[in-house]
Length: 159
Image (cartoon, rainbow, N blue to C red; front, top):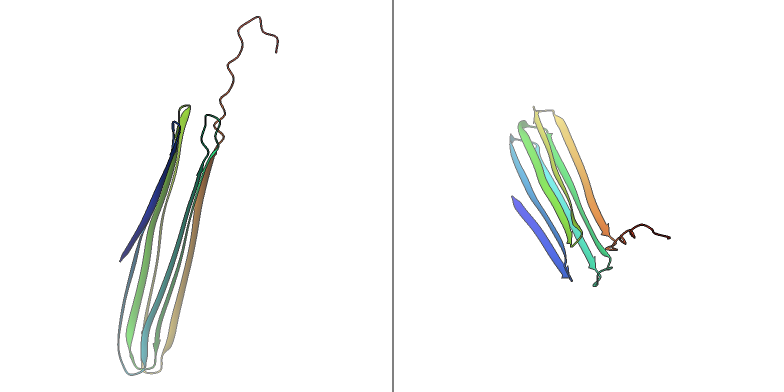
């Protein structure tokens, strides 16, 4: 099992921008057999990105972006001989980002759960292969201009 996570925060004149990202990867496999080849090959790739931009001042622009990409590959094979093999992979990932300004708050979050499983069994003349592939990409962004709306002028008003 692998647990990964990262976060970042940025602050400027009454504004806070906060991001967090986390993932848990699990992989398990088992192969038993007499004669022939009994194999399980597993590969996992995880790529996370976070970016923030906070411009100072009342009218400053604030931007946040997150992306999380996961690729899981699972190959289970029994060729010749007697035996069996199993392989399983799972991933749970979450992202959260918040912008807090004097005029309001915006928050976005995402959670994903992905899993795959394969099992094979074979006899003396078997040639059984199962290939699983799973790709997940999630992303989110926020842009806050920070401009204050002018107060309406009291009547009589001539814009």
